[in-house]
Image (cartoon, rainbow, N blue to C red; front, side, top):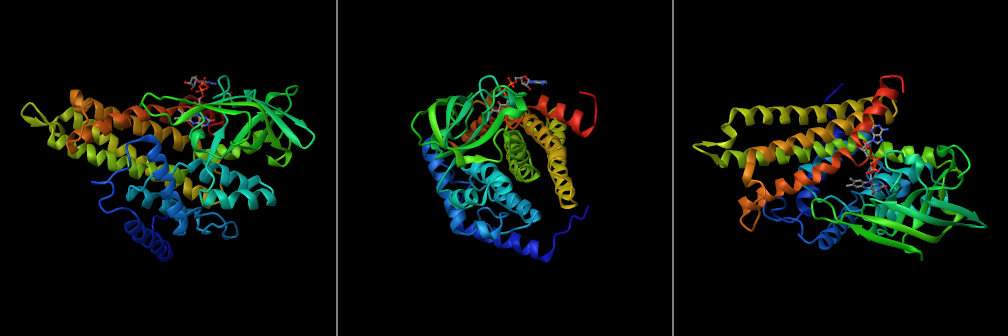
Length: 396
Ligand SMILES: Cc1cc2nc3c(=O)[nH]c(=O)nc-3n(C[C@H](O)[C@H](O)[C@H](O)COP(=O)(O)OP(=O)(O)OC[C@H]3O[C@@H](n4cnc5c(N)ncnc54)[C@H](O)[C@@H]3O)c2cc1C
């Protein structure tokens, strides 16, 4: 594996770094943070995504004819690293950019590309993902939300759950059952549904972190034009698998490891300033041992992601490494936040106006949020099954 970047790639990095330094508020990530209120924060993130687009930094690896920057896969990785390095806000239209857009690019008709991609890339339209249902999560092929083709439209009835950002979304891509009488993988279709259609009800769900990122979404005789199908009728499983490999890809892991390393640095600084008896918490040998392990694991996340980049560049498919990458980063990050909680002990639940206390409170919030890492985008047990069966070739 060659770790050196070409002059053009280095230039790309520096150009982006300079743009970010200019575009983000002064003191960003140090003294200036996102709004505390959840809705305000969502709107702030949306504004940020629109700013990225205006600056030419949206859809960077999409083809130029669809408004992208035509960047290479390596540049896409550099983009993820630099965004994380600058602690740039995460988007609320990430599902639009990373999943809806990439799936439509791969499988959409020309008319769908022309209709949807400009609105996604500019974040004029926000997307959500309607895959999971109360009885179909890991076993995604069991979805029961029914779509019946009547003339030139589908009539959709059923319920989705854990639909992140549905409350902000104008569009949803959904896996729906179009034929209930065949083997379950073979009766599914992939539909693009306008969330402003009559018959859609969204009910927020509160998470352990106190936030309402995701929702229950109900469809009651919702009409969807027949041309909003991606791929063939009853051919939705193949399309959904493409979406999932983008959800678990190395670009995401590369950005995440930078953000987790920043958290780890902050933790070590906090522990150096936190006295336990007569010594700083960071001088406790048991804690040092676990911090060393966390540092090593995050470095492995980085190297794993780079290995995946290499494989894809050499013509390998995205699927085979995706599960290993996702499985490893999610556990590495959870371990790091466990160390934070154990090392901070009774100080961990503190939060408040004072910056030191606010930093402690953020670790607890991140620890709570990290519980979801090993569930979404396919739980760890499912990733292990995929690795066992498809990568190692073990019997089912
Ligand atoms: C923060 C967050 C955001 C999400 N956002 C979205 C979204 O926007 N859109 C969307 O569609 N979904 C979303 N999801 C849902 C997510 O994809 C599902 O939670 C996930 O696929 C697991 O499904 P489930 O919750 O139904 O659990 P289940 O499938 O019921 O699994 C329960 C437990 O059983 C285990 N298990 C299940 N089957 C097997 C098996 N065959 N072998 C071994 N163990 C097994 C699982 O690993 C898990 O531990 C989100 C989830 C979270 C946590």
